Amino acid sequence: MLDLFVKEAWNEKRLKADFFPKAVIPKIRTKRYYIMQLFKGEDLNHYLTHKQLTIDDSVELAATLLKMSQFLLKYDLVHGDIKPQNIMIAKDDNENLEFKIIDFRSITEIFSINSKAGTPSFLAPERFFGEAISETTEIFAIGVTLYVALTGKYPYCEIEPFLNPFFKEAKKPSSINKNIPEWLDSVIMRSIVIDKEQRYSHYSEMHYELTHPEKVKPYFIKNAPLIEKSPLLFYKRAFLIMTFIDFVLIYLLLK
Image 1 (spheres, rainbow, N blue to C red):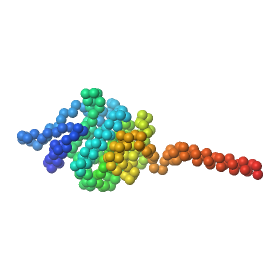
Image 2 (image 1 turned 45 degrees about the vertical axis):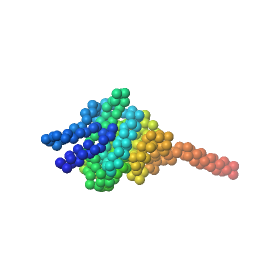
Image 3 (image 1 turned 90 degrees about the vertical axis):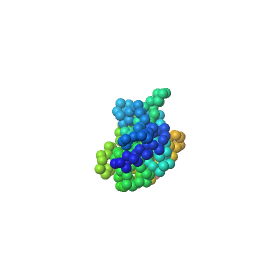
Image 4 (image 1 turned 60 degrees about the vertical axis):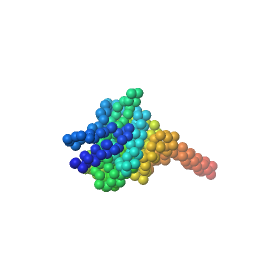
């Protein structure tokens, strides 16, 4: 426990960025402790019990989490436990929401296979089979956090500790919150897709699409029907088939 505390305090002191609360280790002390900046607000989990994030605020939240993750990557680290309970939320002087990420106990080395960091409902499926923490598993946690923030529901239900869950395709968040635009729908679904090969591999990929909505390609659930993937192509094919049937029927009638 002492080793974990020393590591936590060390990370708090050296990792200085706007999305973290400031921390200080007093030079003269008789006990082991450190001091963290007082942040007047509430955690996102509590905030969501009485309010819902707007689309713009959700995009800002995602951008903040991705910037934080990219910052940690410089140190070969990952947060390890991204979730609403570890995100503080308050209003700045201009009444805009701002976010601070807390809980330095979970921060660990990227590609660690021994770390138990993380909360089951936010863990990527491969983490349940002992795969290493990586950018793509952190992206999954960011995606689930966004999904919860915008819908109030978990994409794969709430997962209890010590369970090996069965994952099936999640509903699109726009099916729950009609205000979610199609491009953001696709970004979220691509970040939480079960197959990691279809998921964003790097923070920079997700951040680029988040800041360039016009570049986002529509996301379709695997094995989705053609009418959902490409309505225009579906109706073109249907028209050709019906035309062919009509010609056959005419030919039989005139024969």
